[in-house]
Image (tube, rainbow, N blue to C red; front, side):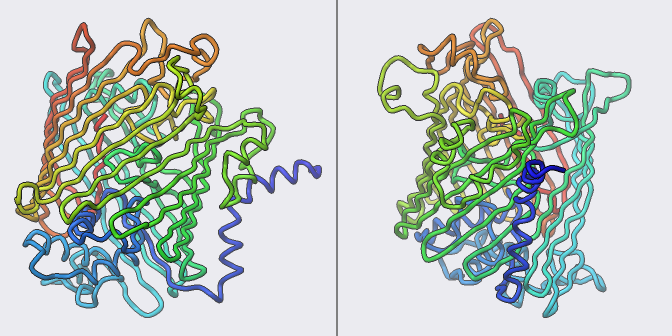
Amino acid sequence: MNLAARKISLKKKLIFILPFLIALSNFLMVSGQTTYIPQNSPNYEALERMEIKSGNIRNSMFMELSPLRRDVFGVYINSMDSGQYLSKADKFWNSYMKSDNQPYSDSAERYDAKHPWAWIYRSKANLYQVDNKNFHIYLNPVFDYEYGREKGSKEPLSRNSKGVELRGDIDGKIGFYTYFTDNQVFYPSYIRNFTKTYAAVPGEGYWKPTYKGSDTSYLGNDFLSARGYITYSPSDHIHLQFGNDRNFIGSGYRSLILSDFAKEYLFLKINTQIWRINYQNIFAQMTDYQPNGVKPYPRKYAAIHTLSYDATKWWNVSVTESIIFHDGLGNGRGYELEYLNPIIFYRSAEHALGSPDNEIIGMNNDFLICKHLKLYNQVIFDEFKIHELLSSRNWWGNKYGIQLGLKYIDIFGLPNVDWQIEANYIRPFTYTSDTSGKNFSQFRQALASPVGPNSEELINIIRISTFAPLDIKLKYFYIRQGHALNGRDLGSDIMIPYTWASTDHVYGNTMLQGDLVTTTIAEIQASYMIRHNLFLDFTYMDRVEKDKKITFNKTNYFSIGIRMNFIKQNYEF
């Protein structure tokens, strides 16, 4: 191997070797470690409600950057006031959060099962656990069994998922987490349409088709889901995570910056928290999957850093730079070393490379107006030319998005009845690029909002947890999007390169251009917790998709199910 080839090989591997080099060099100065609370766990809604009720956002949690560390979460929960301002339902969820967060809970929550079964379920939360000075381990089964019917379909909907979850730590130095499920799923028709269009299952990677009997049009999906990582803290203020998982940046139901909709990906994350500042770096390797393409699947890469600051006890502001890049010329570029600099402005580094990559700059704000009300917003820029933004020519590169939202707890004085309303506005061609290797996607799935660009969206959600352990959500989505017209995409599909717009349709690109399609989603979700993390679920959805001429996609279905330690993914797009 010649010297140039050796340099390329080292460049590709450095991102993966780096965390281990850091670990070895700091082994003797390690502080405590921690794993993370899985995305979309019931902990997050309960915790944010407690934060709003406290009226203080300055609590070291930085909830706009999730998932959250269990140790930080535990400190906050253990210190919460259990006085009169907590309702009966709040106290139930407070107890749930403590039971679910071992070993960072109060000691009374370590073995809190009323009727332990010999050496299993000595706590409410865990099938099997070991707690000693040098070692912790928590082992749990995972399953989700669902049955449903869609109006107009002869075949049932179903889900059969089963697996295991394991987490723990060794010597208070290394934390670990792994999650694995085997899944066979028959989705509603609109999700099957998504799979046919993009050759991808939302939130998943490689999958195999299955069918109901001899009906080859009734497509099901057979796939494996796996997440896993290790954690390490070289100091009290720096925390490292390396492995496969998802991340979410923002305070909304959607994120315009980085969401958890797409398949998990490999990354190294560095969180540095000092004073009222949290600085997060994510260096990720993703997959530029193409149906019937070459194998192994081409790689794409991301570098994302976010500076979050608790400016006051009622205001948090964060700024994010994200850049997506790949080896488009096949020259062995691999992971660009320029983007490993954790504090540089990526735009400056990208310009020095010849501007070959795709960058988004975003800002998120949280405002605790009072002890019942939280306002939030996001703004992103995928392209920024001030003279074009201020002109009236509607340049194709005016790619930006805006989010405004409100969370109001105990509305009209009703205990544990909370309301969230959110509006999202995303200009045409946002998140797109001249090649799939640089668009904001992972395995042909959006890394930000699943609705995509050239869209307007209004979300209303009412959560009723008054009768805990019963939790009810009433959701309504109103989405308008300009779809392809006469076979020409006009900026709504992030998988289609923007080449045509940048050359033949430079100006005159208006919001919602193309075939205007309106989608409404009305949904009821009800979950009853039989015991810790064992839920009975009911879901009803009415989804209607139509343009000015015809209703062309109508889905009406219900499902019932039972799940344990399985976190449901939402398919509201």
